[in-house]
Length: 80
Image (cartoon, rainbow, N blue to C red; front, side, top):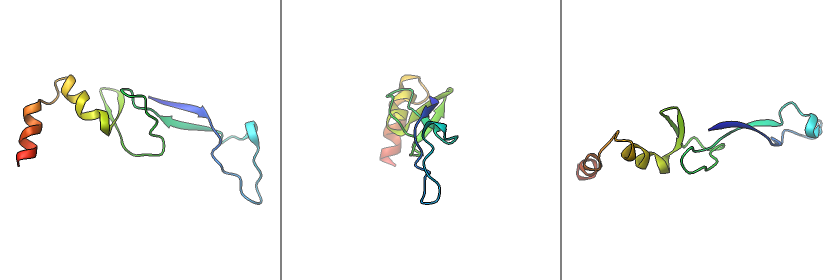
């Protein structure tokens, strides 16, 4: 799931002070795994499947549970 959170993006530098809640960059996009709920905003370890955002840790189980792959297919990959 992708949603915007009211987070500070730490864009303030020496000559540009923090504007607090008035900052136009304050609303940052967060990406959450639709299976485990983990926040993967700073990580490219998220995949889209069936319109859902799924992290790599949950992806294989999701594919197995929804009959996209079979356990035997995974075992063949390991043997080769």
